[in-house]
Length: 74
Length: 554
Ligand SMILES: Cc1cc2nc3c(=O)[nH]c(=O)nc-3n(C[C@H](O)[C@H](O)[C@H](O)COP(=O)(O)OP(=O)(O)OC[C@H]3O[C@@H](n4cnc5c(N)ncnc54)[C@H](O)[C@@H]3O)c2cc1C
Image (tube, rainbow over all chains, first blue to last red; front, side, top):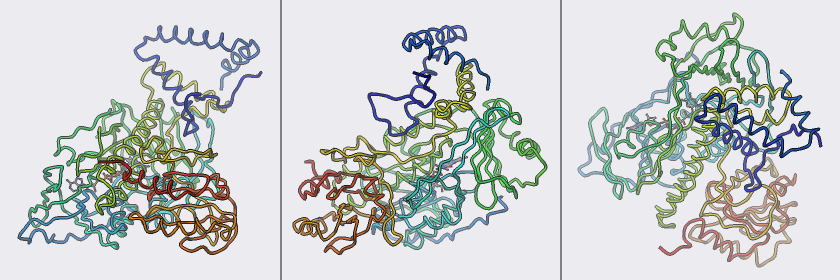
């Protein structure tokens, strides 16, 4: 399965009334998780988060593509 | 002073109360003739209530204030009789462009969803709205009292006593119900010793209204970190009369007085325009924004609406837009309570429904502000990463948050809703603001709703509606809180005690999942109260009782 690049955030527990809500929920969760962390702690946190998510995805084809995309400069 | 606008001054008239022997009593007094107080006063008049509207000033709000009005506000203004004027003067826009540093990241097109009477957004200076609404209020016989400043309030049960200062001296008046629409600083909130909680954003914005003969299209342009204003955001919007609104984010440390000086403002605007085109400054101010609300909007006989009750940052245009929905929600409930057709508890549902709506507005505007003004280094890194990815990837575009534009609240959890017992597709669930649809002869569904309770009945052929159902229409009409029936048919035909409209494009049937026989009970504020697959008089009356708080023992 290729890397999903369309909006894909969703919450199985609630039906969103607004299409942007699940993505905004995630973004807020993410920024909140970094609150009160030093720069170094934030970097470590991000590393762990990437590792957890990468393992969850598992598929190396997808991960390879994500790594390539993240490296692209706009 | 704006050169494009002639500010009206309304006549002060000596209030009769000054010459009365005894304190005069009123059923409803509204304080504050801003957009929200005017909307409440107009709506009360339309419902037959005598209304006194007090304002300390004698004119409209001047300076840079609201400019984007959403479809729901236009529908409410239509119901109040001011919609046409706003549409005629306002500027419609659909395209939003987002820039990051020196290039465009993406553009969105809010292509107006077809088959709605009103567009998604209209831009218009707030003073025009206030002017149109003041004229409408005067025509309807609102007792509009300019230069009447409330200086004291006593009591929150009946009667509430107001002390009012005028050019001719001070008088007192008493009212059974007081609607407080005196704005963000709400002197009355303070007089009553009530708190409003939330936060101030540690940021400042330079807001300039500029008049120019520009050839920019009417679009919303939002820049993150542009070369002409590094590390900050800038927003450009078009208003009526060739006036453009420009918001420059300045940061918390900016000096508001120094920033307002034309010699500071003009170079900023020149750098933004990137050329030597002519412009004229109409108005410049520096704002900080708050996101906060009162714990409760109802305090006995005193009800808070608009900015007095809640304030949001302007990203998303949720200020006046949510205030109009407050007015819309409150007026019908107040009228039923005053008429003795519903218990006072119905007004607690104003608090219940509008507090939930305020929370949604606060959440969204706080999130926008956090995205626009990242609060930490890491937050900025994520923000910039989203913007870089947005250029190529749809998922990141959805995350870019320069303001989630105001949409009407869905009263999902309202105690006035009758929960569904049958399955329906689509969004028109109990509590939802009702979608518009085109009907025969240039009519619109939204105009068939509102004012009072309505029953929408979907029918293929009006003549085929069962006799027993048609007979029940009279029963609905003769309830103490009457329900008028509107039949949405595929083909024409007359039915006694009902209005027949033709859903000739099938859009209504589609939006409401309205197969033959489906029934919707609509509240006076055009929200769904209940719906069923088939007509059942007992269920309809039970839902009406529930939607008016007449179902529960006191
Ligand atoms: C820069 C900026 C941009 C904005 N953009 C938007 C936008 O795009 N869309 C949007 O929907 N909203 C926007 N808003 C918000 C919008 O302006 C407010 O939400 C709206 O004005 C609130 O209306 P109101 O009637 O509650 O209060 P106000 O408009 O503040 O009116 C309060 C009234 O009460 C009167 N008053 C006060 N005290 C007394 C007293 N003691 N006695 C008698 N009268 C009194 C005042 O004279 C005034 O007329 C913006 C605001 C700002 C500052």
